Image (cartoon, rainbow, N blue to C red; front, side, top):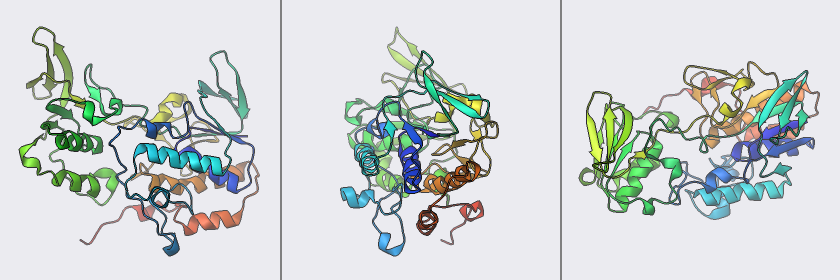
Length: 366
C-alpha cells in the first residue's frame, strides 16, 4: 500500500506514474479538493512559468505534470490562472481514474513496526501503509511573522484592496502584489531586506522571473512605486487612538500608514504537519536522502516545492516533476514491485527523470 498525501500537481503527477506502472494499491488523500491550492490563488494571479506545446520536438510544457499533456494546449494560454490549472489537475485525475479521496484530513502519520499508521479522523480511524509520499505543497501554509497585515495568500482579488499600500517582502508575491495594485491606480512602497530587488541570477528560483520583471517595467514604475531596500521589518502594531498601523524597522525607524500592510513573506513547508517524520535544517527545510526519502523514517518520501538537494531548489513544477520517477524507482525496488521500463524511458525522454544534480548549476554566457 502506497499513500500520497496531497492532491496538487505533485500528488496527482505521482499518482499518474504509479497508474502507468499498473500499481493499483495506492491512494491519494486530499484534505479539500483536487488542486484546491490553485483555486485559492488571488483571481488575478497567473503562472510565471510559461506554458507552450512543443511535444513534437521533445520539449514538455513547463507546467505539465506528465508527458503528453499540455496546459497550453488545453486552455490556449501561456500563463494560466489558478482556477484553470486546478481544472487541468482535475481532468488528469479523472482521465486516469486516480483513487483520490477528497475532503480527507490526515491527522497523524506514525511508524508502527514495519508500516505506517495513517490516521484520517480525530477519533483515531485510519489504515496501514507501506510507503508514504508527502505532497502537501506550500501555498496553504503562509508565513505570518507579524501581528497585523494582509498576507498575499489571504487575497481573493486585488480589486478588493483599496488605497496606497505598503508591501513587505521582496520576492515574487511582493512583485505580483505591487503590479496589480499599481495597475488599479494605487501607489505602493515596497520594504525588503536585500540590497536590490532585481538581482539577476541563472536559477529562476533565486530571482524574479522575466514575466514578473516585464510586467513591472511595463507600468513605468518611477511614479507609482517606491522601493526601500535594506529595510527589514521586525513588527507591525496598531495605534487605535490614531487608527494607524505602525511598522517597526530593524534600524529603529517607524513607518505609519492608515492602510493595513500587505505581507509577502512567503510560505512554509507543508511537510511541517508531519515534522516528526523528518530532520530539519537551520532554514526550516526537511533533510532528505539522495532519493528524496526522510533520513528519519524509511519509506517516507517528499515531493513538490519543499524538496531541496544540496544547492538545488525544486520549487517550480518543471523542476520537482523530474523527481517523481526517482521516488517511484526506489519504492518499486524496496517493495519488489514490477516496473514498466517503457514508462520510465518515456519519462527520461521527456526530461522528467533527474538523477544527476550536477547539471542544475549552470551559468549563462549572455
